[in-house]
Image (tube, rainbow, N blue to C red; front, side):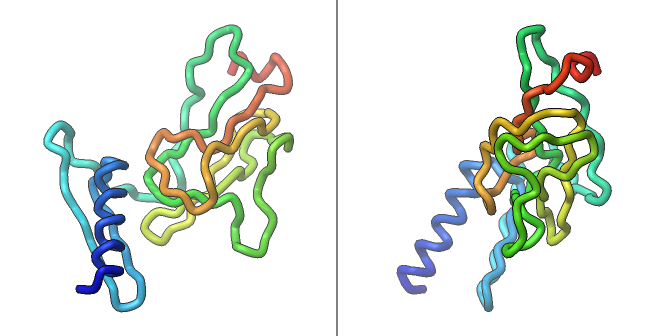
Length: 152
């Protein structure tokens, strides 16, 4: 095994440990790697069955909070666009409505559209395009645009 291949495998193993993943597959050309393991301090992770993405519930907010995060419902790769040569679903300062697609999370070669549940203005996109995300990670942060939306 040459140094480049060794460094590549070491980087994948670091990612597997740092993100506390239970399973990871990497395929590049003839190179195939499948890592699987259960953390001793956790129950076995269920294999996600995707399409449709299960509804998320609004996160609890204090009276002062005017923002809410659209969170990833599963582990996967975050994409801001439906294809490389297409504009992003949303940009900072865009207004979104409930059921509007704000990004995609790819899991097991299935592209899952992630939709907003609230009216709001995009104030942050804390994830980089192509970055691996965990279930519960914030993908897009919205600021409420009217008081009616804070009650639901």
